[in-house]
Length: 432
Image (cartoon, rainbow, N blue to C red; front, side):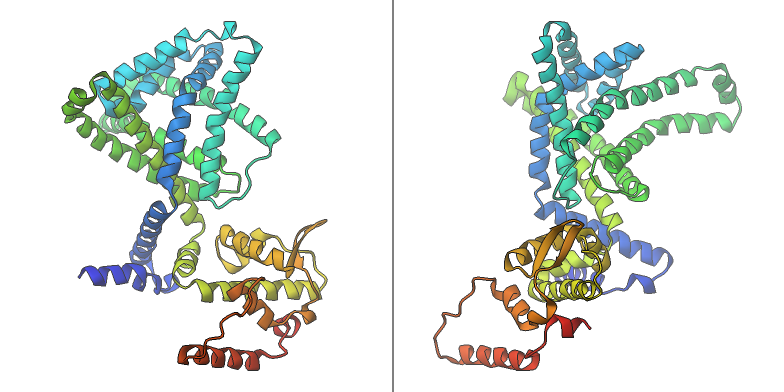
């Protein structure tokens, strides 16, 4: 049974054509694929290492970040909202969460920005900047992006997040709290079943805010165009995981009296670090779900890339070179990697990795005006056999095997048959 389930998850599930399915069946297959690929990616891509890195950065940046936020909110008169929001985020820690909240707020209150001087204030902002930069770097890695925002864009975008974002968030919380005490809302509460629905909506508001917060992060932090639907799917997933992890962690903390006996006063710090690590893992998993929702073709391409790499590489490289040859002959502009990824329905990172292998061979070159990729040599001078040899062996490959056994003889016959079948076939004749 286990072997059948494993075979179905790795092969049978991916052989199904979604276009032939309808309704709940199609939704179920898509959801199962999404869960499996996200789980494989979580296992193979080192998300836990990135989460640990973000925990370290958070420890260094949390107090400076809250100090900057506190200063901004104080100018708008809504700085009192920081403590309850922070306490809500640490609620799974129970009484220890309250203690940590009070300590953090105490650190923020004791931080006198006015006596830091210009260098101290600059350091404060740089520490805050580094936290957002690490978050963007982690999300860009999940979205297979090789480059992040330029320095000028980082300065403006990050400054907007630090100065404007908290004002909107805490204002929304303040307006929600004040609206609940408004006379009109109180009158509605007396009318049933409207009163019950309003109370239910009020209880669901924290979940809604968490989902919207994650959606905002997945939509605007990665340096690429993220569809709102994909960001919303990732945000809902992360919100559900956050609430579920909060309940489970609260139960864990309630039964962790032995940690206090082992770690003494350090138990609070240990639990705080664990919760930070869990929280960042949830953020990264939600981003992974958003990526695969926007790039559903990455399901199959990732599987082929891992399980059938040689065939997949040959097919994709020849397809890319054929497309470039057609554009070269038609005297069209160079093609960009993003266009190739969209055309052949593969992740951008896969195309970028293959292009990195082709550029040293001079089969493909980068152009600056206009920016893009094109053939490095005329297509009638490049044979398909040369391309296949470069794919299989690399540009510096030399045949050094002189053994004469049955296996070597068989492989030589195979190579001779391939050469005979493809003799004289160039990229130009192959593409036209």
